[in-house]
Image 1: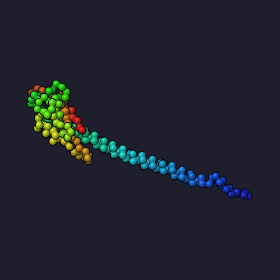
Image 2: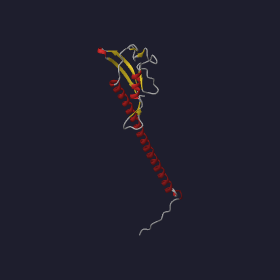
Image 3: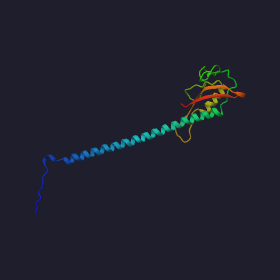
Image 4: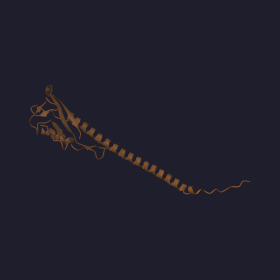
Length: 166
């Protein structure tokens, strides 16, 4: 027959389970806080990416719409007297607010410097503060600088523009 002995814990082991439980709670709390932080960071990163993508799409839409307007709606000048076509970009000689680069602008901070007010107004009307379908809180306005202009045959004018969104 075996006699079982009851062993009494030593005095220095009392409360060890409490310390272990507190350490386990601390570790779980730190891990939980880390997971919450990572989740929140991922959510903010996704929101930033969405905003960045929408801004890029708005800028690309503005540039494409500017190219379309210059290709289909722009009326080339009949006289080159107001232009100095030698430098790049083309400079205004007369009939402009200043003698700087030829600029069509629909931006509030950029002044249009095109000699023909009708063309400048049409550009500003067509490309100022244009909303995008499917993207909320996004709109664009553009400006274009004339880089080159060369008289062509049979009254045609070859021109080069640089379109820039804000």
